[in-house]
Length: 164
Length: 363
Image (cartoon, rainbow over all chains, first blue to last red; front, side, top):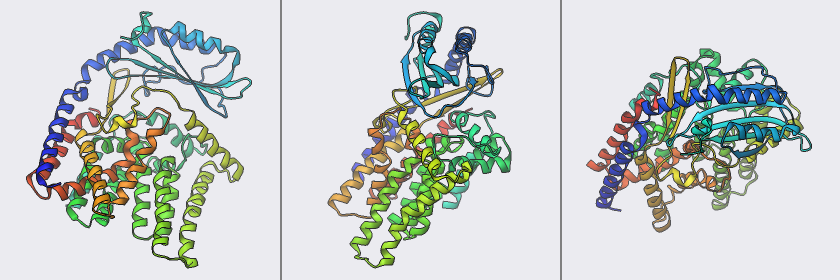
């Protein structure tokens, strides 16, 4: 490649990169996203987290540490009892806290002990909630703990139709 | 010029390093392991333990504080820039190419951000660079040590190290070095690496039972293999080189709010891809062999991700960056030389770094 195509390629790359860096949300996600974040966190604090705590209590998992540890991700809850030896992963798509309860409750009989870790991160626009419920739980029969990952849309917290 | 670049590289990483003063992103995962290790009660972690041990040194020296958590990755990232320069110079024999490669890595937003977070990726990459540089200088023994250290940090080092090992044997066959001593070196290479790997694991867990150590490896494998499906902010490997996925992460608590942006400058990745294509053309058509190594190493750290059936994140690109930018530097020097256009491109990379800087330092 001589210097002419190199020049053309560099011009194209620089121009396209400048456009991407300016036009994408790279520099604009600050204030707007913060407002969304705070709103969603408020919703989570008011409705979702108490539900999860109740689920954990119903499952017989005692809360040893956590609640909303301010030094960690918002809505961080660590309910720890025992560690399991092996890990597998089960994923569900959930639409509401009722669904969350139902799906965990359905597995209630196979849950013996473990770590229940619950944390939330807001995602990129359109805002979606990543609700990871990591449950290192021993499943009777298979002797395998499980990690549960749940993905929410924020308005699901208000029992509206999921996603937007 | 290199000294200025390295000094600048470490300086921009140290500025605001203690902000946020709370754990961010995957620090939430790794800091408990570091603390448990320093308290003498190490627990199972889903990676080999060397990264946690090394980051623990920072905590021991500077305390359980943001500076202590992050100082080791910062220093390692700067060493990585230096090693990239040395590697590029060794491969290309051109000062400008090597400086371009070092500058691209130094001003890479991805390399910058991850180097200011207590994570394993930068540490593993720098140890891998040490192994590659040792191999290029025929230092097989020290190369084997670095290989063991890199593997003891993250398993992804296995792909490029397997490649290096194959190249060592290829050198022997090509040079017809069939004396016992010549063959002993490559035979010892994996042996030393494996001894170091298990030695570090045994020291970390204070458990010298081989069966237990093997069981730990099986557990790590099962954990890693068990991560499936999609996850928020994950992105397929092919997309990393098109428009790299921006990973916004938020931390907040009463009265404070932090955000962190993990991203890469598209200009760097796009020129990198063009350069990889040009290098391939030179290897095939012009029989330019010196660029085979960075091209193959880049491929070994990129291609496997195309076959992973698990959530992938942009920062998995970190180990491939030095090799990609070595090719970028060489191709920029070769195609644009000292023209206005090479300077314009480098200027754009530096300018866009500072344009993104407030996001990268979480302000």
